[in-house]
Image (cartoon, rainbow, N blue to C red):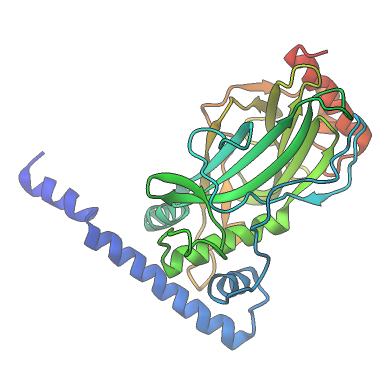
Length: 337
């Protein structure tokens, strides 16, 4: 490469250029604040995120330990929808579970790979890539009152790098934890937290199984439609072994990218979620529907969802019976008895 070309390449990704991009986005945010205030739109997702980011005590503060105190003690399913508990901020989640948890089920990292405008992929990829979403589980051994292993705790939390450690943070704790978030970073975190609080739900659980859904926009041939990402976590009652699977529950009359397939998640899996972004609204800040998942990561080995299981696996609402059907099929896949 010629010297001038090298200099141009370095300049294109220089700190000054990156700073300029962030200032342009901040300008958009400032314009959005004025627009939202003038139109009385602080009840929208963007308005709520701004309030969460900058008004102390506004919104739900996800700081409580992730303990599901009323977990079923038997193997029968409860299909009551419930929010996912949070992970205590300050918990370090690098490439595996912290000392007081037994398993890291997954950690999602967001990667923008397609966008209507190239600068969107660059700018928002950098902003969204600052955070990841961890899901932890804790397997409890048999006790005097329960004669088998159980899924004792489950928790979810947004993370960012603090002094080289992937650390769980929240809108109420990131400053005291030393995350060093800018005002724009705080808005992104608040928007992500707000969406999770509204859209991630435990949809079926027993003493040894938990299934949760995350409402997720999916790109279907360039069109974005609201769908679900479903994750099923199982604990073998006799051995305490943990296994997890994930798949897309497509929108009505749609076929999931890649077809009717599911993936078993490797232990301590860090999932790079490929995203597509469209131009969004006049503020320049994408709404939830403007950011869509392109499908399951390419590095996951897929397996077809057998036709007899598809009705249960793709059900928009699970029942104890459909949850039992999913568990029985996947236990059989694992060779569990």
